[in-house]
Length: 240
Image (cartoon, rainbow, N blue to C red; front, top):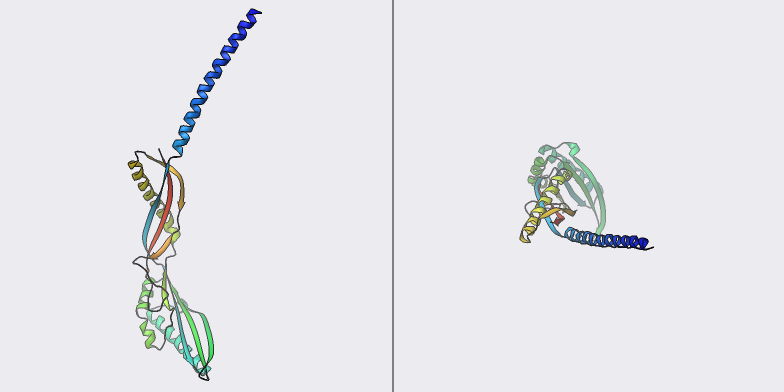
């Protein structure tokens, strides 16, 4: 009976030792885990900027002109003459007939001091990838006035950059590098080191006039073919 009690005592002592060791080990692992989790939560959020100057690859010029009179056949004949003059102007600049197309027309009749007045409005659009030729056409547009074509408000050249997808990857990489530089400066000031990316958000790409505001589409003011593409990314970096 005594031998059994002695063995049971040894078993109890061994179990207690194992339990104590487990508690110490578990406490260490828990503490180390909390320490690592706390370290993993250390991060800095910064923004990175990327800009690139580009040249437009598409030009569209919507031209609105009208004729007004009291006799429909006469007004219609004037519009047809203006259309012929417009096509002649662009042919003289070097554009093909297919570069110019009608996009709409309208007829408005109203009484003016008891006289029935008729206005016919015609809209034509030039669409081309020949940016240099488009600029020459805009520069000489006063020749249209000499030909009897009066441009309405809203007639202006608009230049567009359509190859954004071709520059996106490089610009995102550039913005991310710019963000890392900002994070590294922060880490240097706080005596830490920059780790990997915790999360990142790509901002919207914007395409604006390179040399300030341009009022494309307004009569008398031409848009610029020189654009600036811009993107801002927000990146959250781990700090080691």
